[in-house]
Image 1 (cartoon, chains in turn brown, purple):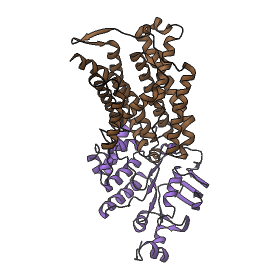
Image 2 (tube, rainbow over the protein chains, first blue to last red; image 1 turned 90 degrees about the horizontal axis):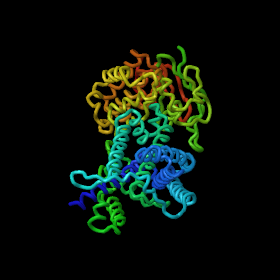
Image 3 (cartoon, rainbow over the protein chains, first blue to last red; image 1 turned 90 degrees about the vertical axis):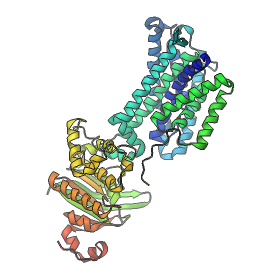
Length: 303
Length: 246
């Protein structure tokens, strides 16, 4: 029972990383019909940005603002930094190839992924780095007799809050309706007075920025980070996106959490070494039997 | 009659094909002008060019004397031009009400409060069925209801100029009557100037003051709606040969 609970909490925690990264995939796909393969590498870059800020001048931020303050500042830094990186990426790598069609866009995204991975390696080196123990909150306490860490609780609460905020913006505000309208039909959205460029700017800033926050959380949780971790994480978050239904915001959240849970339970009860295989078997299974994902595509088109 | 919308010598190319070969169309204050013609004549291209979602090759488009060449397309809604596109193009997975709200998106002086609600009530008084359907996804509405929604979505910005593209497309006769009743009503009561693109020439000429007939990207004939209806050639080609008197 204790193992189960431990795997459950662990699964929800990594599931919330997947969910936050999946949200970015889904938002960008929804509006651009582009699978942004560089998205996972932005997540890794976020991890490195937070890491650099925290170890810069021997943990100055943590010394002055405390463990939680340091974590909050690192996340904010990654949020803003990766948001900017996302917008820049759209300008440099995507906007110039829009007229060339979707295939060119995907190739450009793959190129961007390789560029980011190698860029991280060039700056931070090819050996894994570690968030130092001194900057990571590690208080343990018992919840209903079961051991959890405050870090897990904070990660879960923050992720759920972020997901709720995004859901609210997209589903309940007029700007959110404008985003959904742009995703459906750009020229009609323009006729409504929607500036499509603003919508594109917004999704390429917010989507990656969420990944940046998840990157810092991930660094705090696992401590070790490596230049090429974005690839595996990106693929897993992509699996989560497909699992929930691509282009579907609640789907990305549910897909992420579910994937994290399944992966964690599989690692705990079956085999830790085979967990990645298990995740990608799920991807293949979903693509084979339910390519529209669990929540499916919302289709309301009259036939 | 003061000119509200002036299209002058408009040229539009699709690749090597010239879709519009220099056409001039004018719409006055409190006016209804019909643009008629067969498929591929360039009617929809004309409206898209006015809305600036179709790049133009030559000529000019002016709203109340202001050249629109440098105005980005998304700002036109705020300047008082509403475009109800051919084939309705409602946002299928958004609700009826969200679709209506988006119609006012580009209008800065329409805050999401009372003014918008008031205008929405006016739309519901024009098309009562939309009120019943307000929480329903637009894609689940019938074709006629979608057309009503598309028109309502255009009107909610309280435009000076309404560009209506084929409102009769695929509609049952009884719905068609209702749509044209509303077109007449908004013109008479609200003074909206309407540029009406139609294949249903008989219907269009019954509400319009003036008409243009496009053939292969050129204006073949133009004139007062009455004269067009009495013109032998127009009657034979567009009105099924029957006698319509004014």
